[in-house]
Length: 613
Image (cartoon, rainbow, N blue to C red):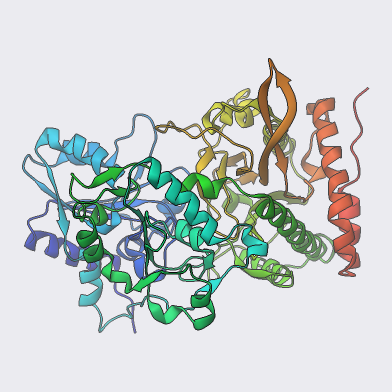
């Protein structure tokens, strides 16, 4: 089958908008569970625009087609979108939000269409508060218009279906806590809030709660489902395609659980909510909210979000173990790549083919399941595209220069996410100094001690300070939470300069990435990323409790790119302690592979740095 052009799809969508008296139509990135990463069938925004990034929102009006996306994707969007599209800078001071734009361009009494399953209650409220000032209303469609566009071209292109892969039980040796105990904790919170039922729609929260994993969404071990928890012990309903549950998986489900078809959640909720108090998270879809009357609604963030974020001892140890094996894979890859490019002078490798080699090394590791996201493998100018994905047909050849690789794996005992930037060749002084400034920010954050009243926004500037000193910066957050064999991006914790309502204070057991960067469009990109576990610190002040970070990523930095004169003795000591830890934890495991090239590479790259005198 052929491929329908973007222009033809947009034209069809505008015809449907006209039939429905819509002046604008919004196409979010998210699925019905407000997931960041979604299955192919739910990639409506990519289908209608051609933009493949993981974050963004399309707005189609009678005359314009626009994409809002954040700083990670501006360059990518400019490359992927057709020339008649406009890229809007999302979450940038002074730039219009979607609701600001619609309010300023649409006539009074206009209708804006959106699928109620794809917009959260929280986002709907913020949008409506602006649009109502112009008497612009939001109209929820019973059928998604992009789906109708796709269906209209069924004869011309293939329409994807929802996955049918089996769901499996995650043993307690990995999860650390039984689903029975998790449900008990949830019901205690329901009791405190006088809630009769709780709706759970976030896929990673469902997977965590039931100790189940799936593969409906690439790189994310989750499965399409909803859960409704009742306050009583025997009240629990799972909405899922039952063909995904084999008898072994069913035997591990909590006793008394009811299994219903996936799409029956809405009518079930409408029935159960009558005369009851129903807890619905504002991150849930408007489609779910519309099933619950105002009298029955209890609207607040559910407790699973924070419970899942604070890892138990089993999960923390699993994450540490997974990162050691992941380091072995990445070190073998970096040793192989250096030999190919520097020693052999190979010219046949591309950004894509070398990423496949990295995946091979990961697949050799015990308990490996999949990658945790598409590998970002970028040489020179492509490194400046923050979330670059190499196209097998058009990507660049690996040549001498600045190489950035951001990658990760899903293992039964943990999720990994690591970035290293290396130079194959002779770096310029400017490149060395930029890398060193990024590294200093990375060290500053990784070595921080802080009181337990601190949130991620409070400490984001620490990673930027050495860049800010010379007028440089990066257009993304500094860190995100990481799941335990779950989504590689996890909340509520994060490290970012962006203001959010009710930011979460950092707590012991939370995972966070530490990934400052610097990007020069057309030249190169630099990013250094470790996963850290928040831990109790020995530091005390007036008997207050302090926290610190334990970096569990164990891969050396590129010595060629470090300007030692710019480092303090404390920073050098931090690197040396880190290298000793790599030698102690990773080298013995690497030696078991009998990969002499990788062993030699690691020993060379963890040589201790000399302190200043």
